[in-house]
Amino acid sequence: MHQARSDLIPVPAWVRETFDSYLVCEFTTVKSGKPVTLPLLPFYLPDSGKFVVTSSILFSKKAENVRQNPKVSLLFSNPEGSKAGKHAVLVQGMAHADDSDLDHGWEKYLGYWRKKEPYIDAYLAEREKFGWFWKRIVVQVEPKKILAWKNGDTSRSPEVFGA
Image 1 (tube, rainbow, N blue to C red):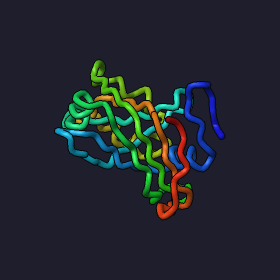
Image 2 (cartoon, rainbow, N blue to C red):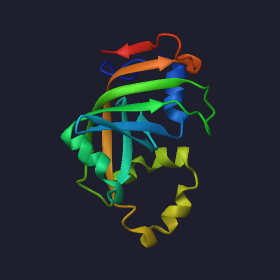
Image 3 (cartoon, rainbow, N blue to C red):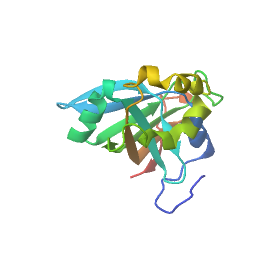
Image 4 (cartoon, rainbow, N blue to C red):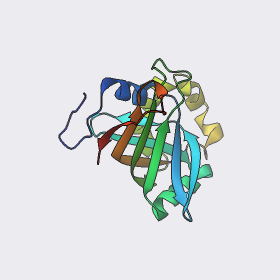
């Protein structure tokens, strides 16, 4: 199990590998009491145990939803394009949307982005052509509970980590 700090939720290596290598998660927010789910590129921050997703201000509804109700989930269920096994991991947590630095706040996560999507630099080279896309809100998620199904077998009870 990986645990860098005492307040992190410890998880086995296969769960951590899922976080690190799955390219997309299904990110769910709540709007007017109903779930709203979108595919997003997630970044797992091992030092803090938190997750980060970013959103262009062109698609800011998810950030608005987080401000109204910070309860979110991230479902890692599609291993396509990753080197990890076919697992299913659901992260339930509390989110915070930060729009204090739309132009550069997301850049501190660029290393994680490059690891998952190495071709991102080609888009960055053309950044001035897509200015509004690169004005990004950072949404940070603190996990409260993690449910994990090894090998994606949801017919069995999940392993539960955290609260």
